[in-house]
Length: 275
Image 1 (cartoon, rainbow, N blue to C red):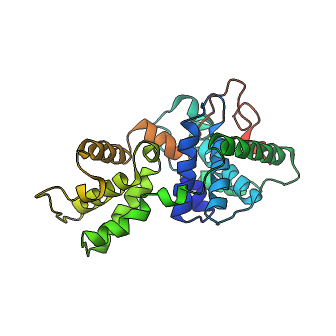
Image 2 (image 1 turned 60 degrees about the horizontal axis):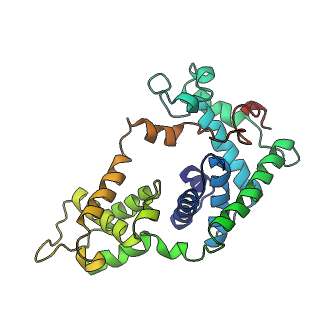
Image 3 (image 1 turned 90 degrees about the vertical axis):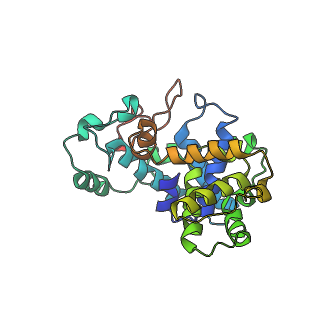
């Protein structure tokens, strides 16, 4: 979702909305029944509509096809050092290529034809999953943009009288990181905003009042220290570049868990023939 939002030049709020839709969808649906790739495409499409940052169906499909190729080639990853099992995809065929050569391979492939059968398959999958997501979430997505932790950061920073702009920027970055996991489903946005500010202040040596009561109690109430600790550790764990789960999410192709395979699984067709 982050790669797609970046390539489509969607603002941070749209990226956060797509992640929230994604996590809430999979808290109700099974990965064994709905392909993660089609759900991701559907979330980007719906988020662009909700945030009034519309992107065409064609551009979304081509973007995910581009990401699909990069992931199959594992561009930017150390193939000789890290192995992800089924997510290795084309690793054996591209182990001899360096990143520049892989980038050239990706660039050499012509854009998918809108009249081709593969494009039609991706388009049908996108429309089908859009309906599934809407039905799953009860057709109520209007509230999501107002529930992001980003919305609270600047207000909290003003109340705390933090003049360091780097703190606000770092806290914003931590909120973006939190979108990668399902914290938005398990915790209130105010808690994630407080965690982001706490971590940002720690990075910039900014001290906040802890007496007579910790500063975050003003925003989220008392007895929430354990929740803050859990969220903080979860976000910090995302920076572990040696963790296989993190690297798989950043570089590898993610095969679906569907019993009858997904529309874009390696077995369905060769990625080089996708056009």
